[in-house]
Image (cartoon, rainbow, N blue to C red; front, top):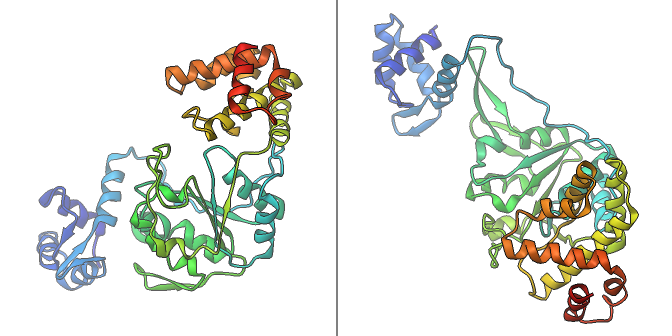
Length: 377
């Protein structure tokens, strides 16, 4: 037997900032502590091998360092609540591909689905609410450029002085037969290629433990993204990466999510007004006319920015606090550059004065006519 904590502490002293060691280096340190060579050799060679004759103790040393720096309180536990049935959202309005996603989830068939669309149009909420209404467990994984195999599949953690393998959200979803929601999948690096086998619906080997995990009945993968995995040519989603073609090919279908039609978006806005106790039917109508006019202009390359459904909900929340339509608009478009912000605020002020000039002509007139009607009244 060896005293792991004592050994790690001495390694830190003799080799500061080091995490990779040869067996001989660790044994020499252990000898100074009166430990026998045989169990120490067995311990170091059981760790992940970096290269021939060199093994990594980072899974032990890094948590050990953090533990030593932290104040002595209670022992933190490893959380295992990633898998759950999401709550139903009262403000959610069924529209778009919701029924298709719901059917896929209810079928419990492994059917990898890729959902793409502009930001703030309800892609993630659609999957979450489909799971909620189907009483299905799901796991949401947020992808960033730093996401790697350790985050997804799992890695070694130090718990109560013992090194244990903590399974990641992907493995937990597989074992539970849950829906795995991979959010913003086009923000990841090539490190997410560890999911390629997962997307085949076959057993997955956990390389760090040698365990083979088979997906339980009902397991499925649904990914959301702002692009189709080809990057963003217009620079709107600069963090979006080009996803490997072989990786994309493993998704059975791709659903393209647009922004909702005006009637649907009006329902969404009204639901949020009810939630925040600030119902104003006229304001809801004006907001949806305003946002749709901007989107049509965006599609015609007339403006470089767009008002999303999420942004309208933010405006409603601001309106519930300040009770001022114009101020709520201004606060929520301040994130845009000065010219765009002024154009959006000015357009709303014209729409608020004469909404009929926009509403009555938007289907038959050109975009220039619509904007002229808004600006000139």
